Image 1 (cartoon, helix red, strand yellow):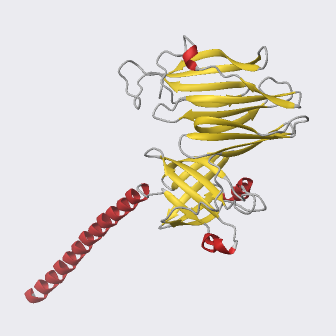
Image 2: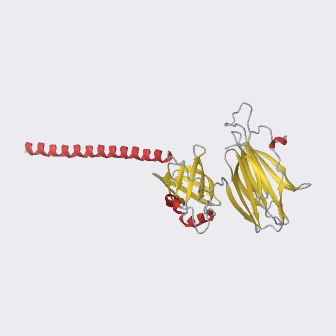
Image 3: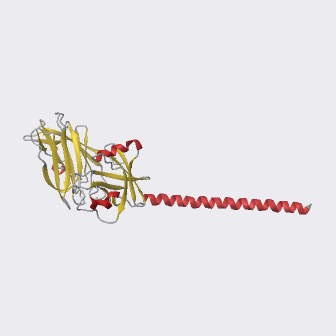
Length: 336
């Protein structure tokens, strides 16, 4: 009887030991899986999106196939500039797209024209889609002939074919009240040529070319003076660390032609200029042009302002020979 009891106790002890070992093993697996999952999360956020990506037909470009390319440039730790250009040597470019994208858990995300656009990278394949699958056809807006910027692009480790690619740096097409403007820039380095090509004007639709020292960041169209005809506003930033902003604007007169609108420099405003060192942002808010910039205190470096955000609202008024923007309201905003 004692022998049977000892045998039963030994079996129970062995089963308990096996159970404990299994639990320890499960904990180890969980811990290791947790590390793996954590490593995957870290590696995802560290994905290098910078580079050039092309459609499959790029490899057959010498056979007269059309193709598009995506160029991604890192601006800050979490912000990237995405540019899409296509072949332009033997026909009008099929796709053109420019936007800033922000790093997220799922890749890069951009909000442009109300579209939430997502860029994901799997090894060397970049995929462009929309956050809402039902919005995918909206990405045809940036192309002609039924093309769509959505799809897959493969990374290449060489410069894009400059003999074929669309060389426009910035490009945007704007329409309001049956009048349209194509705005684009060309050139190399800090000096660029800004071209404004109007259409729909009754008298003069000649293109206007202006040389700018810097680059165009955006362009908007709005009827700021409520006269039934649009104003075109082009936002530029200077080359160099200061990134001083400027506005090049045109107003349509009686639907016949367009004339320049004067934008005053901040340096000429005794209230606004204190602590101003560039880094401007511009936007149309209803019928006002709004300018924002950080305020620098004495001793601040160019990259680290410690003051508030200053906001200037401008109204468009008639001048002696043409329109001009006049500062209407200046407020200080405490940074979050």
